[in-house]
Image 1 (cartoon, rainbow, N blue to C red):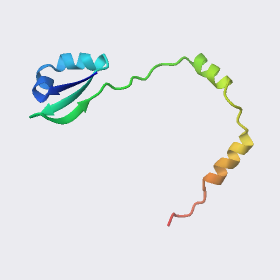
Image 2 (cartoon, helix red, strand yellow):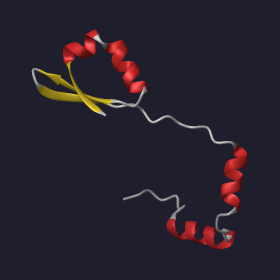
Image 3 (cartoon, one colour):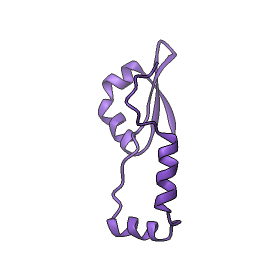
Image 4 (cartoon, one colour):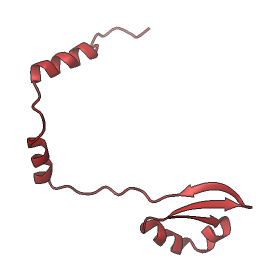
Length: 84
């Protein structure tokens, strides 16, 4: 939900606005009726158990180490020459 608030509301009701951000609300801040900014909640990092990640990778495709290394070597230049 996006809600428009004034600069004054942001100053006077900051606690309520912060709680609403925690709940996922987004705000457009206006000054003299002109939008000047947007407040959006940060995406929270979620913990994933190591066992879950390991299970996901078990079903993934196998990587041929030799081919992978060859691709990296072809893409990267390890020469110690200055770039011009």
